[in-house]
Length: 514
Image (cartoon, rainbow, N blue to C red; front, side, top):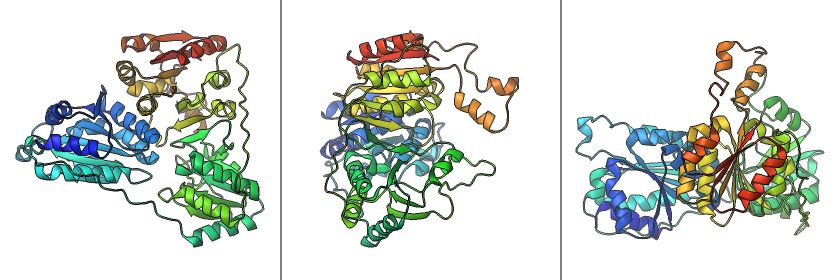
């Protein structure tokens, strides 16, 4: 057995099932070990950002780590943007990064770099292996670190000689530590705030937005009359019939402040205090207005559902609340394609158990209102703001949940960042329906220009927000990557193609001309 084989055996023993890979020369012993040891599924991504984004989607849905296999510092750097998103989502991921042989580092070969410095900003745990004998133990530590609830990115740097040198055995799994329990003082403080408040918001994020947390939040709201609000970009939100309806905090700061100033009390569970995405003139960074009583019930890294249950008990909430379970879909839209009709078409056709990965940007918002009482489904969003997450995240979610249909609701500009995901979807026959919003522009940048007071952008500014001249031929690109594709220009055509795609195994792309 060599070091690479001890790594694979350790990963399998710890329950790791998938490795999203884009390997190079320094990872060849690990590639060979995947054949030597059965039990770990390798999935090729044609760009490292696809691998890291797919590991994010997999981790969100499987609630256990996937691995990535990346080539030295430059390969890892190509995947950093989606690891930034994964860090914000608190997704469990183990990055395996090959490095130069220990004795070759001093030669400063062209691909040599400071991988540790690249890894630290997006990783909660980083370690570099020094010999083959320690590789199995380090792998077990990395998996345990990534799986420490609610999840984090763990990065293991492995020189090539540590992969090919002899090793004695694999390492046994390391049991992850339990989530911190919220103190009784925090629970009593939150309960007192709810009792005293005249208009209270329960601001939810992280694991509070899974089914267990939401059902408890509904009990708290039934007792106290508090308003349920969730963070702007949740990593995973359970929605639809049977789940309480939440208001999502708006993206733009003036709208968020306007929403939050209506409350005199805000209790936060599983989220950070909300801040503006960017600094704008004459707007504060913190979105909760001064004077609003703010109580922190639970941090994102705490056992948030348990804290909500303790709060429900403290205020005497009912043991259960009958949430409306009747499915109510919007009528099938007709006429022109726009944000409203596109959102309605998806909500009208999506099957029960669908997973919706939303990177539709300016087009996506109406879908949330249209699907509030749709069949139960899971909603994923762009947690860290680094675009190019949608298609890879949908890919990983489909690997994690092969029996569920994934809908990638995707903007055209951000889709071009990681379009290679379509090839992986085709190769793996993944059940992903991509609904591509083609407005031939970076529309959000046009909005931001207007917000900055530029009502009439000049030629150069327009050129940096416009995606025409030439128009991107999405259907041709998708077909070239092995995914059947169709272009639609009316709401009726979109609904028809959604019904066809959602009933057909494998990936499809539907290009909407907006």
